Amino acid sequence: MSGEGLTVRGLRVTFDGFTAVDGVDLDIRPGDLRFLIGPNGAGKTTLVDAVTGLVRASGSVRFGGEELLGRPVHRIARLGIGRTFQTATVFEELTVLQNLDIAAGAGRGPLTMLRRRKGVPEEVTRALETTGLTALRDRPAGVLAHGQKQWLEIGMLLVKDVRLLLLDEPVAGMSHDEREATGRLLRRISEDRTVVVIEHDMDFMRSFAHSVSVLHAGKVLSEGSVTEVQADARVQEVYLGRASEPEPAAVPVTEEA
Image: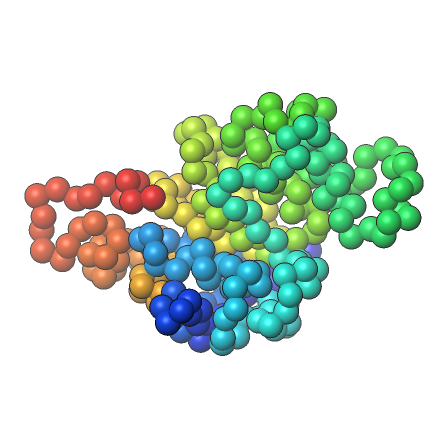
């Protein structure tokens, strides 16, 4: 399977006269693992809200040759675009397998949904394997560890054959081991899908990002590889907490989340 890229041109979102996203251009190639970083209020989540139809925006957002702006949320989702939020939204009283089966059935008609399923659908089995949750398939989602709930939510997007995943701070609150496992999961997913990650954890970004876009005050401040972005003096001054003049101590970047 080949991935599809996301092209954003002149994206602008305004709330009551305040411009939250101010003319953003992005080119996210198929199979990219793009991290969006920037201070609180930089416009990262609002940008993703615009892509997924949750807020009104002007400009152009194209995925797989289709214009997204102006489409309702459910039609954008049908084009193979899915997102997660900072808090995982799973059915806690249902098992891991049931959560995935419900997500897999989201595109089926009511008559098909009423029929008993014979065995486990292939896409559900694949999602269990990809997310590392096979051994937990019969556990209620509510008893999963924090990181495992996030993996389940990602699995629920995979069974819908989402081609563009937009993940909002997927490793927030995770242990070191969970962060590492999540990074490896995102790498596997990006082999045949396009993944965009809003993130504040700079160590996680350095370890796993293919490319990085830095937002500041609703605009793209810098873009490139991790090395290129970290070397950008504007990024050091505005986001990484190091002014252009030497300072006695740098602000720890992980505390700006």
